[in-house]
Length: 449
Image (tube, rainbow, N blue to C red):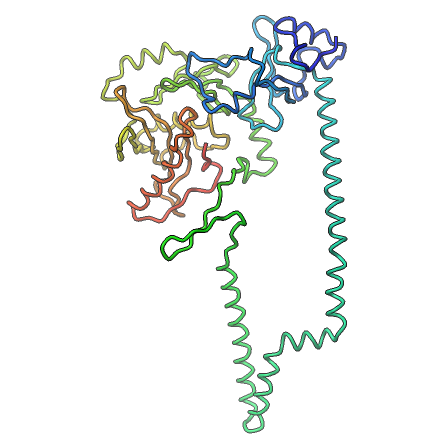
């Protein structure tokens, strides 16, 4: 049976499994090999909708075909369920790693024999386009070459050495004329002094030019300038950061190998259940026998982690009302927003669990255990039930280079509300209060989710 990539001809459930396993090609027999390429039905509304997080009792209607497209995927991992049916963990090409997910057989549009062939065809097409681009660039260089040769020949038409001496040493020639007049009336010492002054003036000129070059700042072409008082301020549009910036190829491969499969599918924090993005090195006692867990339950007041919801309910039932807030000192309150400052040394468990949770939404984060040198600032929404965290940022207690922000995260359920900008602005205002000059740390940890 030949599989079709058309949504109308796609079999479902066990029928799909039998159809795919009956394929004559050996590579199309289950289980598919890791690294194979297949075509998968992808629900684009999971990526494009504004409120792509969900409430605990809501779910995405995968029977709606209006937002379904076919995408090439690489098989990262595989596992067999209790009923003997295989599931595959896939990475969608041209999409961020946070979109990786486990899929069932009814999501597969075409087997590896078709996917690998299309992947090879796409690679050949990319190589052809790359060669074509290189050829066009070489042609453009050849078209520009005659102009440069004409300019070179114009200079070479005269006496190049004489021109260079006249152009570069014109001032020196004039100084020598002055010196020659002095020589007729004075001794050779005056000539030596004049030559020394000439050398000093040239050296000062070179230093001045070098200093002036340092002060020249080239603004991007899309910068928008406006006047504030006596100052001209240039505003540059925000650019998307490369999440792999600063990693060499070997480190990137090692990082992706260790964290290639998400070990938590969903995070339930308060009344929100959020789909996770990346791997997090959680304690093994929280995970299942296969090193994974479907839903990780978190107490939003203490950041205690639980594998079962019944454990979370039992813990919160015994939690006093006056403790329904983050530990530490409340340093800011405005309306329904409050900010708490937590010392990583004094509240080590809270800080470590916060880092575990943040790693589920930050690809490159290395701080999990050594939280003692850091302060954590947790932003909360306040209501009658208590203080509900929406985001946080951290900074070093003592920074030699004056960093005022090390890591920052707004939880997905509360993004697009301006909380990220608020956290960054708060870090600068806190630096003003401390009478320090600081800026965010430029590293993999200083990524804004």
